[in-house]
Length: 319
Image (cartoon, rainbow, N blue to C red; front, side, top):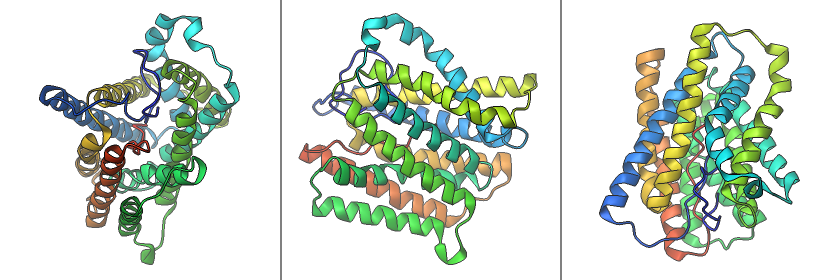
């Protein structure tokens, strides 16, 4: 959700931006927020590792459906606590559009996880805030400034470092970029919804629509999971929900511009998990390019927070 979204104590949608405007975070709040971002990063990449492992025997579309269906069950206590009035909306079509974009992004990224090294895909996933910032300029008519332009240019330069187009772009990286663009469109939709909708309503409709969108695509490739796979799917859903809630709480305690540099630990964890679990030695281009992208998005977020005229780009979704 954008910075101007109302706060009602409910979990925000995945990939949500910062909470209500606030001054500089105190030392204790900032320390807690940093810890929550680090926890979110570890939980998100661990979930990606599980999805990659499950993708060796289950189709990514089935995994995506079960991840969100089980995640919706985990969120059910928060959704039931508010009552019907908090879920009222007059923008059901926009909620549906957000869910379609979110589901498409998820399907692309989960498929990509089965096709390319984990660290490379996580690094490319950092481009989502760059695309979101561009869309905000084009669709929401936010003012573009020189420093913002330089930050975005640096971020996309980092993307080229990772991709190394001279060697060709494989289907995994290509799908990740498509996923990032779709998620950026979803973030833009979430910002528009945030002008009139509560974060609880956005979470409720997303958690219901996304599994319904994924289900028709999962049925043709359905394979009955065994007990071990069901256990891993439940763990993946729990980790994804934990990553979202931890990031949400972090944004309530401190500004996104202060926290985004710590999101880089996703790439560190992806390199470690990829190397230890999947025997994937992380490429230097992924680590360097990811650092460039994150530095650029962190600068843009910090700059926009200081100027105060545009919502800073949020980190990529936990998944």
